[in-house]
Image: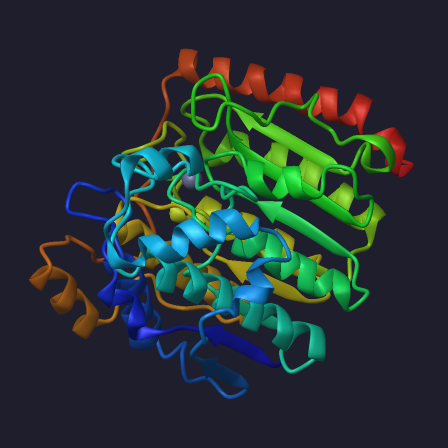
Length: 376
Ligand SMILES: [Zn+2]
């Protein structure tokens, strides 16, 4: 098995600002947990630090005008009148020192992962600083400035590979869906909290692609408080059959863990076990994998979930007890973390019935509208 972990300790020098929920510390914490479990130095595992992507690479998806604005904002200062047209400003997408460098580094990491997988240097590559799925060609959106997931898929497509994109972040993968909305060579599947309850407000079953791409954009929206006992059967009813029919050469996975029940920004109720099971299902069906990170605003969850995901991709079982040295480090950060897994939680019957009924209707709609297009 040839696996690659793409990681840079450069991340710690960037900061979206003290009030912003996206904390760069989560990347360092994830690396430390993987390292404590011995998952960064396994035989057959390559660890590579990315170089910032060249501007020419970003131009394959983004407009020159928008990139010029990002470049000018690298100082951390920018004129409010200009930046608001590009989704930038106080709030979700702040202008911070090194913004352009950070955007290029995220893109560079996902491109490196895609390159290693396309060339055969790695069968599975994980770049957990990537997965910034909301960025649009000409504007920032939802904490995302440059869409590294789209750039990685474009790279794989340019090598003639058939790509499926599976996004399990709590938010709809709108930027990636839009990029390939008319393209039948890229199957995008996103599972997420329903768009009438959560940003970005899209991701309904009816958004199923256009023209030749009709049936190649798939959305499975979920009701608030959807837990693993509801999520996994719905996921199984939709994702494996579609991947089986589409037969991708590579699966690009976006592994946001803001679907977790303690995430402060969303309302789903997954746990690390359920998340890891979904990753295992996708991984088992994928000849090659480019895995990316994504959302996750409870940093302890991020470290646990992405470590569990990397163990799954390596097909190794790791102990549920977190390594001692790591527990001490987490305590020093005032994070209470002892187990990789979450304790069980039970949803009240009424809530559960509502979430179940909602997802059943979505699965049914996908099976009626989209499955026939794939001969299912
Ligand atoms: Zn998200």
